[in-house]
Structures are given as structure tokens and as C-alpha cells.
Image 1 (cartoon, rainbow, N blue to C red):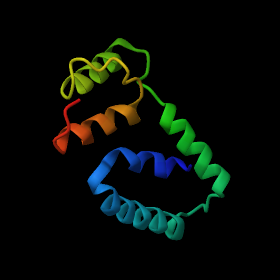
Image 2: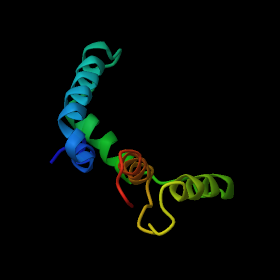
Image 3: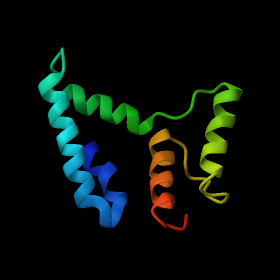
Length: 97
């Protein structure tokens, strides 16, 4: 499963609309990139971004904790920026984290 598909899955009922928009954005990037990227480069970057967490400095960690805390006081499993954004989307569209 591609990174793009994994990002879209938690969006539930909006998934179809998100898939179309995401596909259009990816198509635009592929058509307009000054340096075309090979599929392996896109997958490598996506895998890195999926695992990217906040930097270890106190200010960034506090910012990350505050951001996650805006959406849930009980979710201790949110460790990456992607997970935080998914939580934000889920809560913003009526989900109960």
C-alpha cells in the first residue's frame, strides 16, 4: 500500500473527495516539478515523512504536545506529525478521539 493510500484511509466518508484532490495535487507536482522524481524517490520521501516526529528541542516538543492536546487529552500514541495531522482531521470532522 502506498503512503498516499495510508494517509487517505482514516478520512472515512470524505475519502473519495480527498483521493481526487490528492491525486490532482500529485499529478500537478509530477507535471510541474523542476526536477522530476522517480517513484522510488517519492516513496522514500513519503516513508520518511510518515515517521517524522517533532525535533527533540524543548520548544518544539512543547508545541507538538500543545497541538495534539487541542484534539485529545488521552491519546498517548500520537508520536509523528502525520499522526497529529490525522488526529486533527478526525477531530475536526466530528470524530471523538
